[in-house]
Image (cartoon, one colour):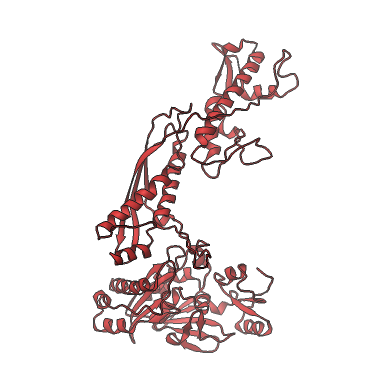
Length: 287
Length: 265
């Protein structure tokens, strides 16, 4: 499967292969997902805007249906039955109501073998290409709650707990979706509490390495609780919604509001991210 | 990184001879400061003389009331040493706070104090415990060893061989780490030693320093509240994006107070 989206850690190799496996009955191990190689992939735009599952997913399932149709036609020839009598189940094409069947892999082999595809004008090969143009957007939504504790003596903010409840539509792989929520929350918390680009008076970047630019690390975070409800998206056949950015949207607001709420109890009326120890301490001094 | 000659002597004499024969030599121990500097081409020695093969620089021993730590001993080994944990748990605690696992598995006591980074942790223990720095030619008292930013009393080719830490009545180290690098923004070592109370501060200034006002107050009353209202002047303290100098001065008080609490158990 050649896809025009790009995977850089979101698990497309797994989730996209699942879409194919669920429809063809082929083992996940036999499905190779190819992306990001311009010698092999015809065209692509990459990955952005929480769109891979929503935009590429339906293209994958459409291409799958076309390949299956082609294979069913060839299987009918191999099984000497009518195409309308052929069922695809567990990776095999079967003549309905009989034990006559042929494996998908055997059909694939015949599709590329001289004479294997028959002599009645059938097109050889099992390649199909599909595009998907989304008709409208998806609208994931949710509520995130952050709890922080601030040490007024040092200005250190500790995230104590974080709970995210999101509606991300139909999920292809819930474990991967949960991982994306965690990753997004961590990025958002980093923005709210730690990360900051600083330049000196001459414009020189002084946070040019991770010795100075504070990235969120595991030790700075509590276990993140992620719960989901699923309402089908109406704008794509999978019912999926964008998930990749759900955490990054909510976490800065949730963590930032938690910090402001804590500081308000000490008389601070305004505070801008990030809540680094120095900035929190200065805000407490200035009240 | 530019090309350099690499030497691995097995004796101090050989190390010094190589040093004397080279154009622009540097001794190499754990390499956690020198090698990154060379990669950035900030340091361009002609010769690296690695000291890790010199057995006499390694190991931890108890000599009377002193814990003697060889200069080539890794931070991780100090942190986990049964001898150090029994005699001076605060020292093991401090060593366990240095950098991360990778740094603690390579970095050495001698390398750290020869480099004398203003944000290093060990200087606080050495001055706080009134330790003695042993070199290939003499012994240097803690108060005389660290002289300025990245400056020590060491001569050009002098090699730290060990540090002798007197066992205190009680001691503790509290560190406020840089949130990104984990170096000490402020680290305060408080100790009740045979020679009196000592309070040593690292990270805040150009070099480790003592706070005599806190020492005097703790001599009268070894309790957190004794130092709670003592604020050191911030004129000469470090100031950067993570900690302005007034914040560092404030943190010295907070960390000193918490170190006393920790020392009292």
